[in-house]
Amino acid sequence: MKSNFRPSEVQVDYLNQDMLPYLEKMGFDIENYEWNIASINWYNWDNNPRWFVLIKKYEVRNQFKYVGYVEVDIDCDDWNGSESPLGIESIKIAGHGYPCSAIEVVREEDGDYVICEEL
View (cartoon, rainbow, N blue to C red):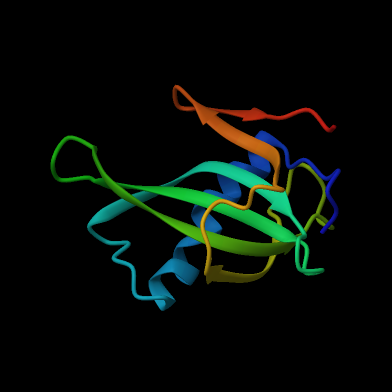
């Protein structure tokens, strides 16, 4: 995973769905809640490059009410091309808060994904 890689909006949409089985294996309820990526940040402060991903949790039975979030580290490959899903290597609960040395990759604004410019 490289700092200059930017996923396409299509890939972020796929990632929103492809991450669900991983969240379920970690014990999160994917049947009664909706999970959506709020932001993706790249970092490598420990020589282990990965994405720090903020995922928002919504209660779907109560008019899509925001009820919390989870922070995970995601390692994936972009070998499939911009119109295909990313190859997820791993998803783990982030054992830390927002990494201050992170580079913003994607953010959600008003229901749409903004792909951030490479620095």
